[in-house]
Length: 162
Image 1 (cartoon, rainbow, N blue to C red):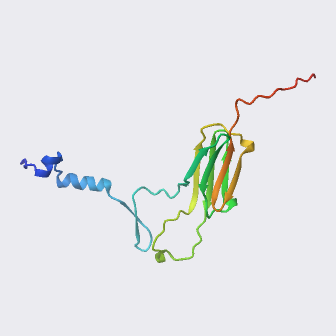
Image 2: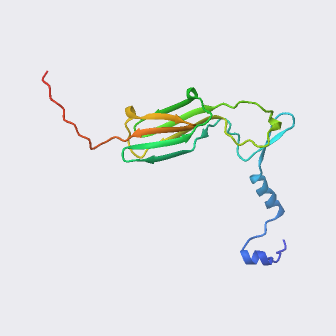
Image 3: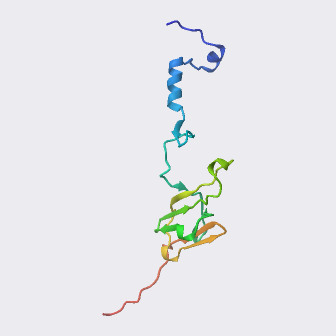
């Protein structure tokens, strides 16, 4: 093995020259996975097939002195395809957005909209009153109003004789 003189760039940056064999190995590891898809058409995937997994909703979560508010865009989702589950400290939003096929696959120029099932679970910073909570949809925006539990609230019980 002959030791090659380092180039100016290698000396300047401290980089190390990689052999062709090592370069080929690295490219194989980082190469995109090609997934065959009928009629010799190929699609490129950077990650393993995750089509079974739900998409994740984007949300805004904030608080007022009285409540915690969760907002999420759910445009295109029918109310019967939406499920909101809440506990005192957790909210889960699940749903499914159905695609209406109007054009053939090859007629699209861009496809960026998400179609299919989605879910999002949010851990709440404070406990909420489940019974007083409400969900409202307005112009494709889901708004969850979750009243905070008042742990300092006191009430007096009247003692009854039995």
